[in-house]
Amino acid sequence: MIRTEAEITPSVLAWARNTLGLGLEDAAKRLRVPKDTIERWEKGLGRPSIPQAEKLAGLYKRPLAVFYMPARPKEPAPPSDFRTLPDHHDADLSPTSRLAIRKAQRLQRIAAELAHDLGTLRQVKLPRVNLTADPENAAARVREELGISVEIQMGWSDKYSALREWRRALERLGVLVFQLDFPVEEMRGFSLPSPTTPAIALSVHDGPAPRSFSMFHEFAHLAAREAVLCDMGWRRSGPASATIIETEIFCNHFAGALLVPRETLLSQIAATGASVARDSDWTDERLVPLARAFKVSREVVLRRLLILGLTTQTHYERKRREWAEERRSMPKKKGFRASPARTSFSERGAPLVSMLAESYSQGNLTFADLTDYLGVRGSQVEKVVELAARVA
Image (tube, rainbow, N blue to C red; front, top):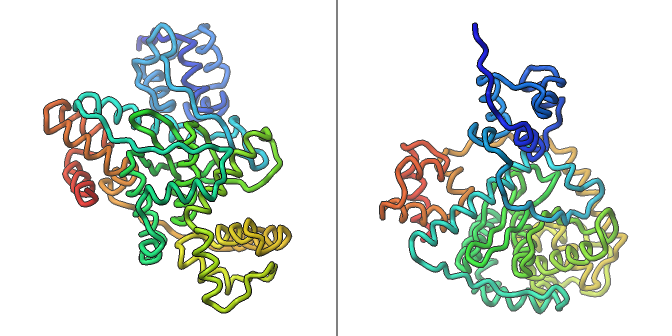
């Protein structure tokens, strides 16, 4: 049988593997060829067969046609790495995380093209936040622009409702919020600024309360016009530069102040009859009701208490270690598989789905384009659009 070689560009093949963060050994193992074989292909000392090239395209999540380009295509630069916890740096990003970044950038690009094709200027009312300002004041100003009172927040049924409503509030400001598949152990979220399609990406593997916090942490970066990867670390030291650490401290403070306003927290504590004096004895029995009222995590409440001088750093660190051990010892919950339509809607959000539906109805997109951009089969398209219509 004659072996037909693929006339690919070696440097593009190497680029496709490197941008996925896949080592030579892993790539060779998945392709079931010797490591030296892939090395030779990338150096132009040999070529894969056409079936092998097709497998490489599937492995690297790239169209096969890309390998035939004379040079690697231009792509948006990845967000800057602002992760501050130990051992976090760009080299740690797994293929899953890199694909999530690539997907978010593609969705953002699609949204920008749709807005242009529809001839409509998206109403982006993104406020500017000065990272040297008082985060308490900045959070109060942004919260007022969101139009969500504390009374409304406390009336939400649970943390999932809170996440949904906060997302809608940001979408009303013109922010795209994507919920994608990437491990929280690597990053909790990232931001992609743009004049017309500013976007935030959150991990679907995070809990609803941490996701709400991450959303506003990333919102602070967006409001400062920064594209960054974050882990929401509270540390003041680590591998990151002093500027990065201070920026992350600001964004954490901003997110906590927006979700748990100072005066309301103090009044909630006073209503229980408890002392608001400096107190290191904040037990779970005292923290859980406060977290439940604001629809946030215990850690966010305790961090707010630390910032307000109502607990100690020692107690705060002790509780964080206790909660981390608690999470490690808990059996992993079996997740349920959401329908393709719900997954598509959750990933993209109502604004992007609505723009896609409108563009299709105007004849700017084919049905094949629509299914591709929504990531579903044709039978699921109507269900995705219906989910977006409920939010409008």
